[in-house]
Amino acid sequence: MSQLSYFFAVYGSLINFIGINALLALSLYVTLSAGQLSLGNAAFAGIGGYTAGILTTQFGFPYALSLLAGALAAALVGFLLGLPVLRLRGVFLAIATLSFGEVVRIAAVNLKITGGAEGLMGMPTHTKTWFIYLVIIGVCYFLAKLRYSKAGWSFESIREDETAASAMGINTTYYKTLAFTIGAFIAGLAGAMYAHLNYIITPGEFGFSAAVNLLIYCIVGGSRVWVGPVLGAALLTALPEILRGVGVTAGPIRMFVNGLILLIVILFLPNGLVSLFQRRGTVNTRVLAGAGIGEK
Image 1 (cartoon, one colour):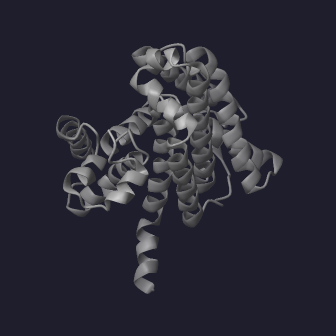
Image 2 (image 1 turned 90 degrees about the horizontal axis):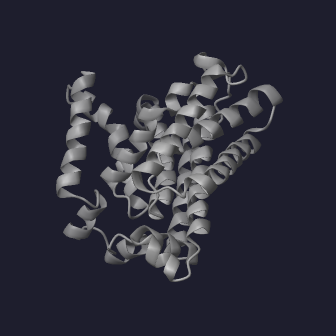
């Protein structure tokens, strides 16, 4: 028991951040499942985090209610943004959502209620490890069920060929907006949990680099099934500690290793790390089928 306590004392923060990053990666997975390349999920996390933090510190909201309010605020903004923005496709959508993220960041820097450039501080650290992973389990269960629902098949059809999906009678605008809103809700929830985990949040934590990192998690792990983003987030979040354990402490070297892993995955595992399970057959076939890993 003492060894377990020591392990959590040393690596507890890392375990928590793996969970938060996994939730953020899952939020992006939802929009990618509908074929929408969005770089705005970090901004949605910022909206959720600031909303929850402000409600807790300045209005005395209880923890659970502030989390819900943060997630709903992000979902509402995602819905309103999705209606006009999702008319764009590909790189144009990515640029538009990235620009939205910059708007959110600049607003957080200049508004007094968000603490300005110094950030918002004073949030009670109510987010616990068990709660983070309980939420992850719930989100993964929801996404697993969603995959084989009418909405899930509509997402799949839109991702494969939006024109053909529209010709088959699928309301592409509705389902793309739905995916965008669900992704924003999950991102806002993750941001709200992060705000009550770290005591302080700053605008830079939800900027361009965070948006790109979420995309990298999905690419490395695999963006076609919900298991992939979790694997990618776990590996890349833990990688600095792993490298530090083998004596690599220089930041540029760690960045080089991150880039090398991404390059290797793109070249040899285009479907991400989850394709390793399919190729080697190391996981029960029925489990893979349930997660959708065995599908193409």
